[in-house]
Image (cartoon, rainbow, N blue to C red; front, side):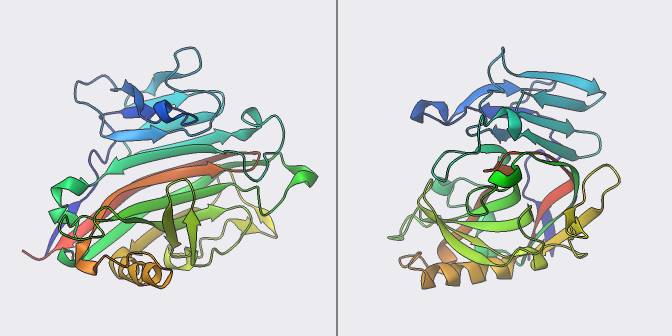
Length: 305
């Protein structure tokens, strides 16, 4: 069997393109690029939806090399540190500077995500077709470095959270299919301050008009994935490092069946589907200051020659 990484630039050495804050239709695309001192264009992108301070704005954001091969990109609300030597990313969100008061249910919320595209829909995604793959393994480790609660008594579990997540995009890439272009989000949950264990779920995402199918945290971690001790969240440089390894292929096939039961992909067959990309990072509907480090992240596809 042949194995290959689906990540373009797994060391992050080509830098990042920075999307806008996404509060208007013309603020969704890449507004600036950080090249980390080399000439090739970035293949990773940063999504900073509703983060208040714009990394692409020279007056609000900055980037500098803190040590050889380690780059810090920061605003008052978001910081991303890319260690191109040790293949790690540190995601820091300071939501106390994003929200003047606890956000209400329908208000936008702060994001700090990295994105990577595996294939283009209009190319038919031949290398990432679900039925062409023999395996798909997502691996790495994470460590919660900071967690500060600025919600207090105003916390509402239906509205406020600090969530660190990974989503794969699963598209119908078959041009001859009447369901061409249909998509679901395949979710891998790492951390949610409201729950010790995250259960499998399916929900509709209004922003993208797509179904989000999450596998639950028990299928993610090689250890317990426990971020709590005596009812409190453990964070800091000495907090546990949790290794994860997700054998995703069969889980994606199950997510396809779940989507059909929920009324999606009714014009899509399994052989029409491909894994087209991913995003990973913080979604911050609540007022929390947090940091998560991700080490040696990879997405490995296995094929028979």
